[in-house]
Image (cartoon, rainbow, N blue to C red):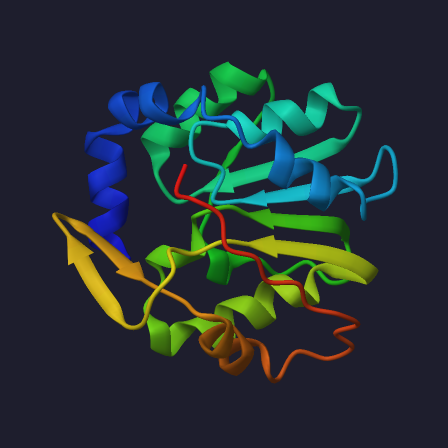
Length: 178
């Protein structure tokens, strides 16, 4: 994931320009329907802060982080609150969040590490919490320039999440790339 972090550090302004105006309202609405009003959301891999800002504006509390220091700097400006420079493996909270939003962020983790990273994040959810994660659809791992991508299918997600305790339900849907 280090090459991906370097990419985002070098290209943060361009990435922010390309993503801050992307309409994710339909996906956020599906997620927020399962988070209690005013609940605490962890935006894991928040990028430039697009979704964190929308959650805050909708009346939710947000803790956001990203591994790219430059994206964190831009996210703090965009959402007007502190954002941590942090990686998925740094998440140690237990039963803390009402929802975890990992929109197009875990896709930079290598396949072999995904079960561990999902377990770290899962442990941070309160009982009954909701976890949103998104990947590009497909099989395998690839590089696009400096960025590493792990693609996913329903089967791969099932394999990575097989060891998670107390999963009540899983919804998978395919949308067009934003």
